Length: 110
Length: 148
Image (cartoon, rainbow over all chains, first blue to last red; front, side):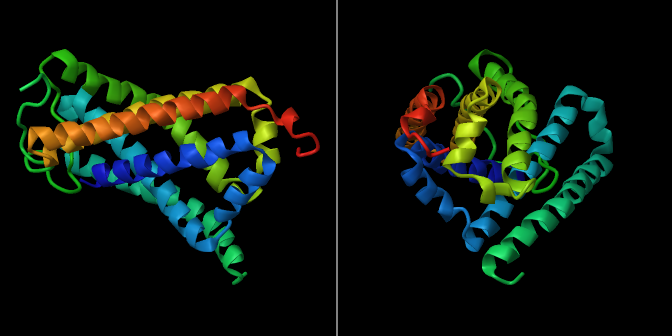
């Protein structure tokens, strides 16, 4: 279920993201107005969520493929699921650090 | 009912619940088998394209703070990045919308509504594919001298 939630979140963002990126075709004035939206700290918080969703969906997708293509591994479902969760958290730690700094800077805290 | 719309148990019910979700059962054949395989193959490619894109654009080197018109103009001066971004556009749209189709199959039971919802997503996907493709391949920053 978490795989679906993150997948839906990512595709819905993609719908908006294709449109906002397409604005580059209308010149610097229009596009730079669009990108200032992304400099808002609330939007950056959502952006951190987006990165987490992409990473979770990616790692969990690999886990699903391992189970699909090597069915015998489902005997070790628990440790493999735990490993994929751990991998996700390990990846998110430095990402949260880097993006967190940028969020706090935009919010005027740092 | 058409191919691929046969009833399946609701999401997660038989596939191990919230954290133990194992993906969909491999379909027996036909369109659904190709769809199943496509999701896995495109998933592997997107592992590089999408995760790479997110890390480069959103996490490393000041993230989105450095993204503006000049940044895109410099980046898209390289055919490598234009190709990357276009491949990402196409694969992510097809992977994402096919994913929505699978989810809709589970939650939207009435065939008429299911057809309408899917068609809505296909139309959005097609329009975004056209829009994205046109912009990626026709973008020419020299139309705005001095902007880069």
